[in-house]
Length: 395
Ligand code: PLP
Image 1 (cartoon, rainbow, N blue to C red):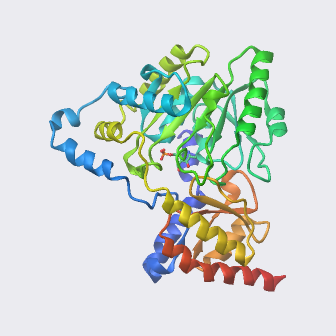
Image 2: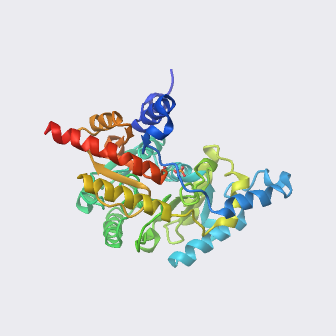
Image 3: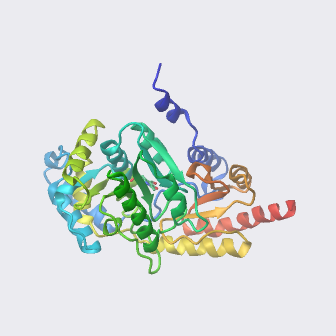
């Protein structure tokens, strides 16, 4: 006998994984340049120079020290930099002892959820959402409840309020959003915070707002991402450098606990305990030091904006429908038939790899990750046109 849940997660075939495997086979058959692969959220822009320069510099140093264990919460001088960065950008008063450095956003979320949830507790998130949330919540005995997607991909606050119950322990939001690219507006965050505060007053229990922010710096034009901690006290930020510094394989991020969060010192202690029980020990030592030197920098986001504009304008001219993304590097496009999986299968015939929306908790869309070479978007346009015309011909 094996634990039912872990076995099921291991055996389940997510659409993204299926597409990645299909794409690898197809590229080997007809050449990578002939497959228009929009399936993966792997950054396509190099890290800023400081990242590689820091690695080169650091490995000249005492390697015993560089490769040794660090404190579980992360090197203090790094946590000081992280606190100073968030404080100066968002007017907060966080202290380094409320930061816990992690192996990326996935670890930030699993550690946080393990720290706060009891079996049977409910966690609310908003569709469309990162599919791993379900695994992370259920892994600690929680139950995920989903607010249906709003037409503009902001939060349907009435639907959210209806999902709150005595069992609701936390809310996970993700803005800029994977897969819609939406950035939740200040009004939306204020509205969410007001409902959550009312619920706390009613139940007398802490309701945690977990903000999953791996795309925080990837926004376009004059869009800003409201910092949840400025609107709600019982807030925790789960951050990752994977996307902003183009280092997803290096596994580095952090958890920041608000200094205004109810019983914040014990919540932080429970986070330390959760990290310990999950066996993380400490985040990668070399990369903690790289990040310490890189805080405040990002990869060249303008490349993604160029891709977004090219893709949006090209698809709009053909007749596709979408809500223009304000951040991240994903475009959520309406499928040309109600069954997104069938649409994605049909797109494959045109060598277009598009992720159906069902895994993200809503139907009828496909996700296009535009963190690709600009030439891929240019070359894919005739295929998008042919796909569109095929549906028009079907009537
Ligand atoms: N949260 C969201 C919304 C994501 O899109 C991702 C990765 O794509 C993660 C969390 C996990 O990020 P990391 O690679 O830093 O663990």
